[in-house]
Length: 141
Image 1 (cartoon, helix red, strand yellow):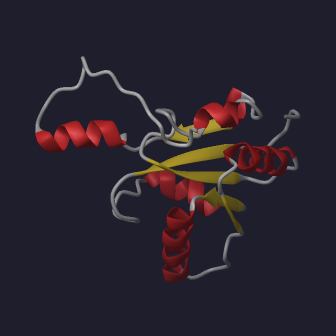
Image 2: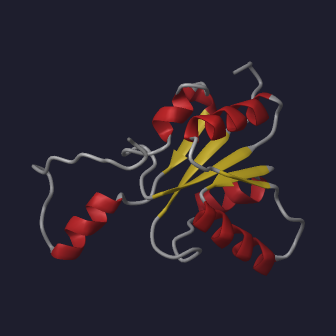
Image 3: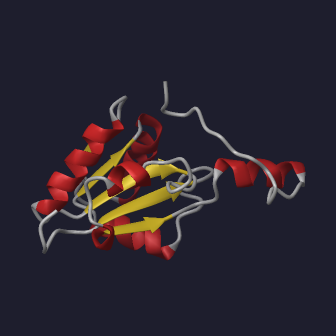
């Protein structure tokens, strides 16, 4: 990614939108010129955005090829477009951050995580998970 590239902010979402939007997430979304995410995240974002009024922000769906979406985010950022990527929970925990780091310099990436699905599951059943072994089949053959 060239110097002067715009920031790519990865926003983790847990629970219902927009109940858990903090000021840092709100600021990132307010400054976004392109928002990428899965179908349910984009639907929630678009509904939230309509409720706030103002000009709509272009969106792009992350489908079956996350690497392609990451390349699109990197290309847009490299052209100076401020990008937000919506993801579930903690996007650094078996999430899209690893794929983004293959095409985006770490200094241009901001990660605003939400609790991971694993931490939420253990919290709901009232157990610690510091000795749990976690594997993921999400997004893998």
